[in-house]
Image (tube, rainbow, N blue to C red; front, side):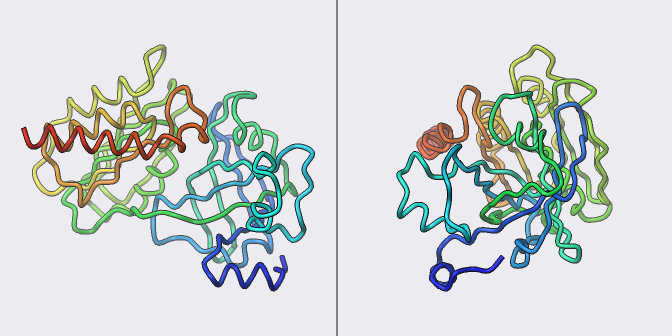
Length: 288
């Protein structure tokens, strides 16, 4: 897609670059997870691969609002009322094929609930979506003696991508909580991965996950941990690993992707304060 000189100049000055993806195909991985593969000329300048937790911010237009062509997010934010700005939803890059210029994103789908899930469920070849990114900062380290992965469905794409990059033969303890057995997926890794699927059933999100990680007899050596998903259980596991087991933060990636009872807008608005409170509680506990 051609870019207006003004928009291109803003990008060179540090503005947020947007890309336009065209749906090439979709695949239902489990009853509640759909993979959407994007391609097209709009991905000509997209690059990913350094990290396994790469993410993009999908931009969903407001109903009835006509946006400028070519799509220019800075112009929209400068000229349109805030309630007409596109709605942003953040999703992990499951895979990026640089040669084929194909981007795969996995979506958790629960009927008509939410915004991105229903879009993915209804997506058909030829549909288009704009997005920003990628961001990211984690990948399995070759310096770790073993790896710990813990997450719910929202973290499963990142965990799956990371497992594919664990060095050959290196131990990895993997705990993934899903609703039931029908939501399990085939995961592969060159590492020595021990994968435990936890079925939530009627229990609160993360309850089974916290129990399983606590029950693990932590191996000796330097661990790199990746713990993501619902903010409540992430907070519990972070406190366990940081305070009770006194693991250092330099090889840990721990963050809440979402929070029960909040959509992404609501969670992002309060996430900074939430994280500051968690860090203060940890500092107090570690100093006592």
